[in-house]
Length: 413
Image 1 (cartoon, rainbow, N blue to C red):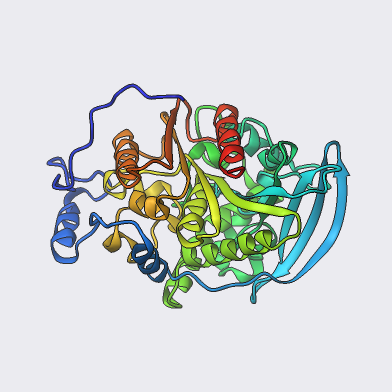
Image 2 (cartoon, one colour):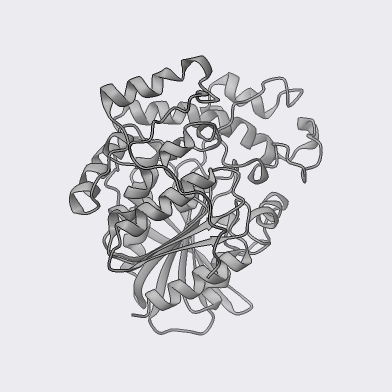
């Protein structure tokens, strides 16, 4: 198992949240954090179990949704994979589109996996980031796969290994994305601004590497919108639209995380009730890893959960890592119940795999180590595996192979 060099251990729960130098993104207002801790209480050392799962589900505002009126839109075979494009209704918005992939010619019972697509600052596409459909993937999807998935559509690879794999869109992505004409004009205008710097966005992004509109040392220079694809232009607007969507969700008594979790719960329930599908697990990278964590916490029917590059303590992220994540990581009220790793461990003692990326730019090393130690403490009798890979924020091929072998073992027991 890949292991890290041994970093200095994080301080204990009594450690002050605010370093003497202050929090870099709060500056002279850093005292807000200490005041909130004293008056409101955050990141308590909660005990995983049914009570925490119920309280977290209420705090996140998970909606009770069902995949209804399921239709097979088309079927195809490609090489050693058989695929179906499905659609269903969750009661609002456009029909959800999903791919169900199986090894070609296999008709017996297979273990199932819900493959959860990432955020990545790319909302034009959802399931297609990780699964091939009957049409070739777009250039934008190929670019993303190269950057963070080792160039692989991993849902298809899972199917080749003997799984029934379901990859579906959720609110805001792919078949469930918002049309530009439903966005307020200042947001929709970002998709057609004369210069990409005309409206500099504060994006709810996960990682500059994951977002081709943001610079990293490997990205080409930013291009004017007339040189961007329709998908890339759309994603500039969608990044700002997420702020508005979270406002609506909060006003309506839920959260973006709660709505997406409700849609994921519906998808997992559908897969479990498919004929010739046995035990079901789930897997995801980054925002997809967050979705896997929530699905594992809220659905006891999910047998095994694999999370890649998406577990760190909240408290260690406060200094300068809050801005780089989606609203889905911060549902209102959750931090008063527990720190995020405790929620990840709330499914204990059921099987859990967390793959930590040692060169992950989106979380601090101390936060990853604290998360690993917290989760391990809540799994005293085993069932948890935490592995540290020498990787950036990604689900690269070695991490995928680790997750595939682990899922095969846990779903065959």
